[in-house]
Image (cartoon, rainbow, N blue to C red; front, side, top):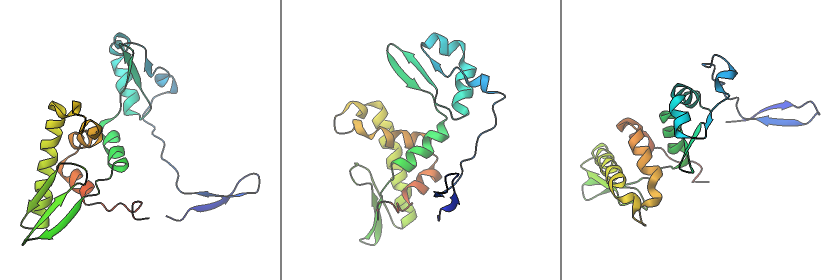
Length: 173
């Protein structure tokens, strides 16, 4: 996207790539003043406020046993994970069929055509996310795959298909 060029008050030309939309579903700023809760009890007593703040897209936290947790909108988290953790899926035609895999992960799919291979890969991703949450999250060679497991858990099959088949232009530069 070409940046829009405009002059700043100091006479310098600045590039503006885009303007972010501002969410307007909040009745007042006062509703959002408390979004960091020092205890589980306070967060529970203000659960509506916790969820409203997270839904509005503002950083919302709570603490329990000296651990800080973030509460975020699931779709916002899913879309950010998909952007920050590109699939880099490799798809190849071989032996009269297709295979697809994710480099660095023990996940692959195969099928007679591209769609079948991607569907098989999505099934493998779902199985991996289940296994990761059940036991692999504590295995040294899998513990770093939280983002993949979370992305799979938060995505529909169509969202996973889009993630798998999106070419990462930044990686090619």
